[in-house]
Length: 123
Image (cartoon, rainbow, N blue to C red; front, side, top):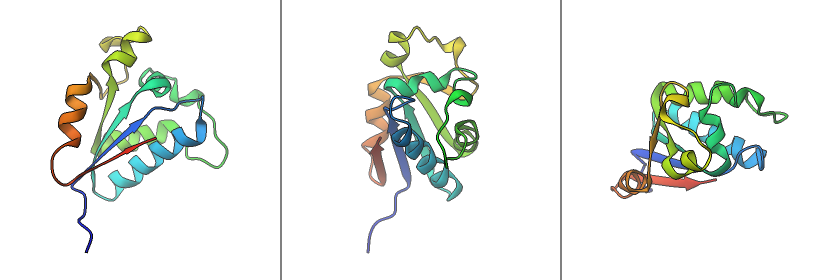
């Protein structure tokens, strides 16, 4: 019998540049939160822009749930982290991000994915 994950860490690297991959990451994260899984979503690469107010509302993908709704759902039962280096490359500072988003680096990411019972996905 397969072991169930106690935590799911999802790293999303895509933004508007790869909308289907981006939407899949947020959708899986929100479904996992709704299923009672402890979720940590990491915004890296082009998805870093979604840490800023209003940016998720600009994202459009037919037949996909609106990104602001997915972010709200994830925030209710999980954590959202913006990669430190990705933020710095884009000039994003702690005071710029939406409520509930933290900025952290690779050391924190690694500490989240290494414990037993953790599953990680990269989109």
